[in-house]
Image 1: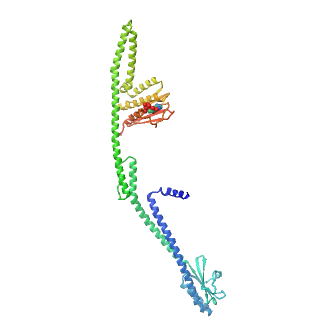
Image 2 (image 1 turned 180 degrees about the vertical axis):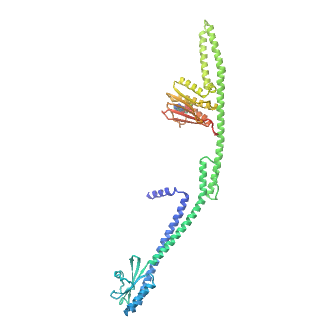
Image 3 (image 1 turned 30 degrees about the horizontal axis):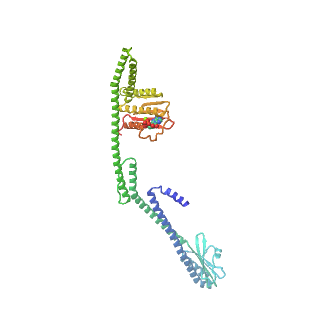
Length: 473
Ligand SMILES: Nc1ncnc2c1ncn2[C@@H]1O[C@H](COP(=O)(O)OP(=O)(O)O)[C@@H](O)[C@H]1O
Ligand SMILES: [Mg+2]
């Protein structure tokens, strides 16, 4: 579990760095690991060999000294002994000291000039039957191999020398320094090679990343170059094919969308035209005829005061005037003349006051437009507000409603609000409920937007924004 956590942590960190850093890390880590291994191994091997050599050297120098000191000791020639020790010191740079003891352990001669350190005697000694005896002494200057060799089986004394390991340490330091230098040089070369390699490797990948980001933003034009005939090359080719296909699909989608838009515009304008025609017809012809009928009936009513049919005529006149009202109403709803004649503001005021009278819901109308708007925009806003008011009457159970239409910079903004039940905007209202869809469609055909804010029990607000000068969309 802990190992897994550790691996996870490591990957959280290592996985997040760029490919370049990963490759550099691998190369550097490998070189450093290899270098450290080689350094430790070489130092170990060299130390072992040199230690053996030093010990051997120490023994052979001491034996040589013992052999050459025999005669001067027997002759008690102290001067000669001194020369011998000086010679030994001069010929072997690693020898730190040398001295000779007599058979009772008294110092006969030594290379110590400022007085002999007596405790040195206790560190090492050789038994008479020993060939030699070596001890390791730790001093401030490093290790000393101290070798004692008995002279004539110890009968006349002992020869002792101390050999320092300084030369060995120096050799080890040189080796280590050389190895470290090599590691640094190899690392530098490795880094250079790795940088070059990652550049070669990641260049096409970075190009792919950039191109993919562009595609994600909807720009299907970028193509990437096929750098090499490897997997990354295949990826580039596949990417290009995909971008091509996406561009094609996007073009088809655009064509269809523009076609749909044209069709929609046509449908709406045709419908509006048809409404206008029927409304005019109803007003100009049907209403006129009905009015003539009513006038005729009224004349009949006055002229035949005694006739039995008088009450019948009166009834007929009432039916006719009711029909006239209804025709007015239908005509008004189909296409209010006031919209064409006096403009959006007047039409909306009229719409609101009739709606208020019919449904007994107070509605507050604020319209701030200094001039008339383009015809299609007036129609669209009028229709949207009309549908919204119908929805409020049908669904909202509102206590009041408000309509605001204003010019805000270069856009026309309309807000219709109610304080009714509200509804879930995101719910799918099915194919039969086309009111909201139609409203949105009308706004978008003019390059505008329609936003609905509503939540159950919180009332509903419909925001419409339509630019006065739509950019080409
Ligand atoms: N002002 C409103 N208050 C409450 N609910 C509304 C309001 N406007 C719309 N709705 C809800 O949204 C649905 C979809 O409206 P719409 O598309 O106009 O279809 P329809 O009016 O034919 O039902 C309605 O059925 C109603 O549930
Ligand atoms: Mg509706």
